[in-house]
Image (cartoon, rainbow, N blue to C red; front, side, top):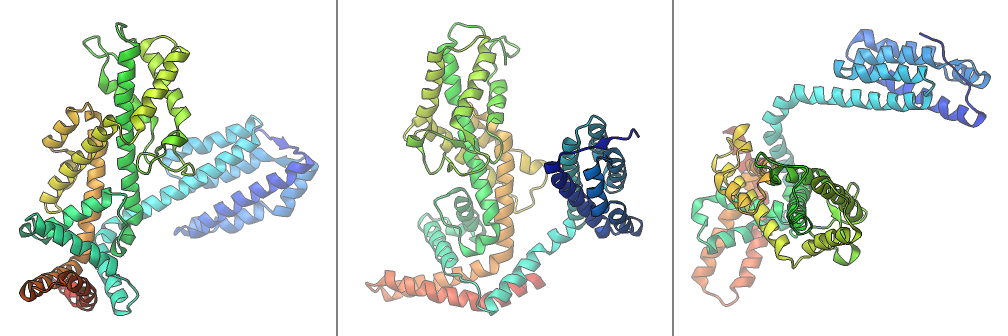
Length: 461
């Protein structure tokens, strides 16, 4: 290895020293945490060979051998890293040989972070089946303990569930069983961002927010694609498309839609112009990762120029901007249609998964029902079928797991609701509504008292 001496400036000595020592400590901790004894012993050796005082002296006098340091550290990294990371580790020494010490140090931090993630994923894979098999029992035990200690508030969950039961009863759906009633109510809760997440769903609140955000993103992408298609029809009338052409020589909407899907990455939204900010299709300006409206217009301008093989005029660019803003308005029919189709497809797919009684696995979760595909196909949104199918599977997993954990609690509240309804019917009192409200509080206390025994019975079964 060629010796590469580094002579940093006075101001950069402290920075380089800090980075080298930080890298040493991260790598030493990885060695200490390793279950292999031969790797654990490297921690002491690492701290002896990379002594802070010695490195400071070498940097000050311009005799710090960066190549030797990186060679030693990359050798240790390879002992911890998976083979897929070896190429990135090898590049670190190349950076040093080319005199790019800063890039090498930054890359070393990235590699160590990737190694940690790989290690965590490996551990998760090892215990995945165990965690999956014990998750329901663990959450039931945690819930029962909270009920016994009276440290959990169940009133809002009780009110939400009784409201769902009342709606099912008014629509004649209660005869389908508590499972069907819960799946419908929970699906609406997950997809409706205007509903507050009840207490019992708080463990899944982050997942629910992520699902809502992804559903919002897919609706935005569908709206952008349809608005962009209308724009291309206006400015490209009579022109032969130069890109995204299908076998028939015409513009292939599927190819164009795939490009639009990449413009708004997963988990992101769009920051529209300030006068048009909304609560559903627009995320707050402080939300990280959102695509700015000007960036979206620039990306679509480039996409239009690739499609038409010419540069858009300023007038056409302004027309594109107006088309997008018009489609983003809450009262726009295009936006309403897209949101309705996306919601309908998700409902159809989750309903089909619920009908499988939680037995859906693999391709069964990926295959969207034909009725949902027809809904998307009629609106030129079929390209959204794969991500919507994946999202529906996530919704089903959250709802199904919650039902298996807290089924005893919901059954207890349902029994109390039936008793209240029978008593109100017999009494025929004028203040039936107030009696129902009082019964809700009583049902909550009753459910909290009886859930432990009910859940333990289910666990025993």
